[in-house]
Image 1: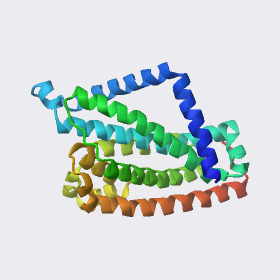
Image 2: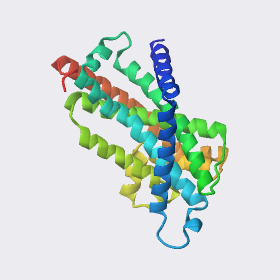
Image 3: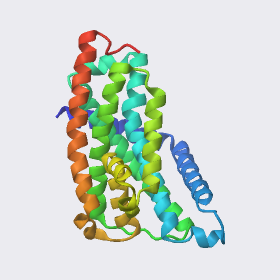
Image 4: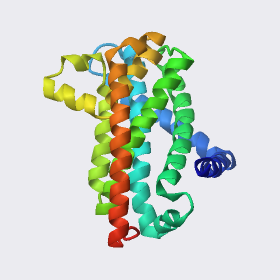
Length: 268
């Protein structure tokens, strides 16, 4: 019940801000579209006619990878920079003392943040696809299932990094580096992962964004639809979700209790 109460409050706050400051929301969408277009042109301008290289599946897949990477960047950042900011202002101890606790509060906040990011990212991706004359496939069931599993996966990873923030506090540079690695991996992730060396392939599958990005590209760009459920990448995504969720929540609770017992929960 506490989760839904916090989620309702976050939903009202988020969409009230989006509506009230609609000009800033619209400007952000336009800037996001422009940034994606500039990055795609930069990545794919290695020769030949620009229009030719930008048109089609490759450019749309690159744009989707960037969107997925930024989604991961934001969700994981909620636990790293978010916890650091709350510790700095004293809000962290107040949230901890609330009836719902840190885990419930961050689950609700991250869920609303994910909904908002999916909404705005979908608009940007459609604009980019139209700009590069690419094609997007709308398969509601597999897309929704993979997005949900991606969120769950990132939540587990986010809780683990958040637990490290509770203990070590100032982990800003390392946290940003990890998030940038997730962005880069989401962009380059493809079925060609299977051709990578064994160690690199194992690391890629172990990180929470690789198989999610590949599955989403299969559904949204390649149009495989329900067929994605029969691939090994979807299996790896399911396994990754189970491992990261269990590991993340366990580590977060252990580190939360350790930080509380040491009296450093709200210290920055």
